[in-house]
Length: 92
Image 1 (cartoon, rainbow, N blue to C red):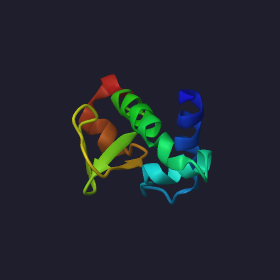
Image 2: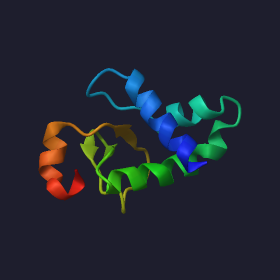
Image 3: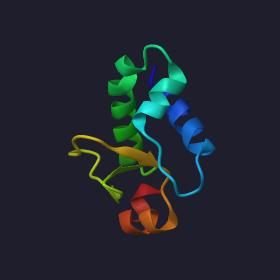
């Protein structure tokens, strides 16, 4: 399941305008338009893992959030050059 969620995250982000974020709901709906709510936990878990690897940025209120400690409403976006520079070379 996590491979499908990971692929869906990048597929939905690929359709977004450069620099724009997407909601986890958009990702879940792309996987299962009827039962998307039950997938939100999977999207969150996979998003955290991808953020730890530096392949994704989890944002809250438009700012990067710590993937280990974020709560509440969040969005997902691809890392930009500034985000990669801020996290250092170990994230690339």
